[in-house]
Length: 142
Image (cartoon, rainbow, N blue to C red):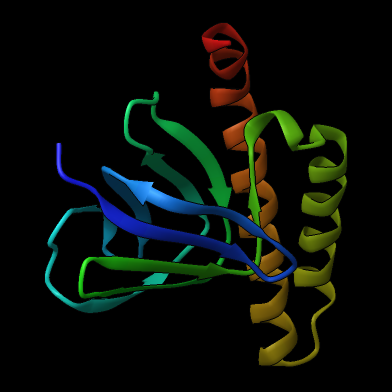
């Protein structure tokens, strides 16, 4: 299968830079798949699973938060606030973050505070979903 150059960058660290055969990201319109020689575009990323397959390896799964994807000349740049592997997610911390975000939603005094709290809640719920759904399968693959 043909590959493209992929850069997975979180705000605080690069997670993967190298060749990739396929990438699937969560967008406002649903999941979006990218293969080699995809047309140039920019997409908004929303919290959800991110799947990518390096050549000769199994599909890898990450929890992605808000950000963007830029596809240009067979190079894909994914720039998001955070990227985490299922085994690196602390479920208790994510649950506490979800509860704090729910409380922030109830206590918000402005539209900006409300939207920020909703973004925090979406990230926390996504982390819990990825941890619950994919962490056990990641351990089996090893």
